[in-house]
Length: 362
Ligand SMILES: [Ca+2]
Ligand SMILES: [Ca+2]
Ligand SMILES: [Ca+2]
Image 1 (cartoon, rainbow, N blue to C red):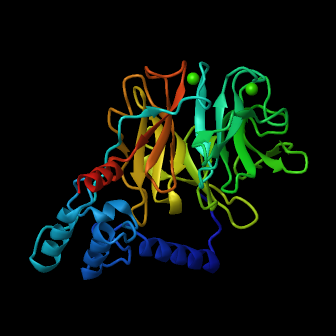
Image 2: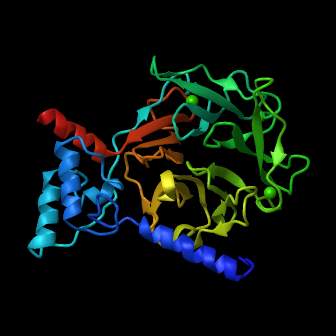
Image 3: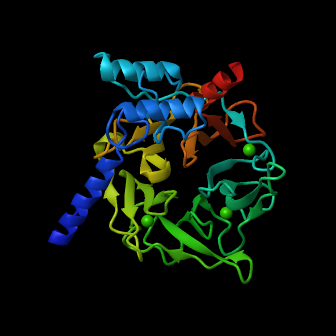
């Protein structure tokens, strides 16, 4: 990537990898202290029977890899530690049948790129509903935790939206910055570029656009921006697949290409990550639109897996948004049962669901 090599950069790299190693997901390491030992058994017992915290990385609390965290995992772990039982494993767990997010987020017109702030209080998305300036606009809505509903979506206004396509929005973690893309806007670097608007609290509107500049944008098509829940990384895609840029405190760094493990067909797009950049969901076009997932192995992104047929149904699924805790997956699909055209759908991780069922059965 042509990064300047210096002792400082090398030191940063070593520290970076050291910190990633320390938080790598180790099968069976429920308390995430990088050692699988009796401490994990105690942690699991506390979680299951004494209202203790969840396994730090949920799958690590499922060493027998059956997507249910239960007493079977404790037995498995004890067998592994004290009776030469099999090694703990990690599997990718499944998702519930998706549910339509409904009104007022969805409409008879097309919806796309539904994304939230990490606290789940604010959402942005694209819609072609009545009130757009044309060809898809960015809309925002707020979650009312009292009524458990989304507020009537509002158009993000004339500083943001235009008569051409306004697509691929995401929010900064504090909800004060709106990133999205436009094609060939004056002042850009050619083709699609990523632009940002800041919330103007004085005038209660989204402010004038700023281009993210030549470190991120180029004559290629930069699209699908996604700011990680901790605000430290900006993911996006161009015609070479998915890239990531780190926030250095004052600017976005030179982007790094996510290598051939993720960028297999160069049709990878719409990245979304969980907290601490541990799990990456994205869309890939390979004969059809499909949503894939890759996990950070401690040093690199692991081989992507295609999500199951309940998510990737024959009508197609794209533009995933994963909640920071990894338990809820929002995506866009034109599947039957919606309000019309494309809609926002949501699915929950089955491993959580089964735990709830287990609780009800007691
Ligand atoms: Ca528009
Ligand atoms: Ca561009
Ligand atoms: Ca719709």
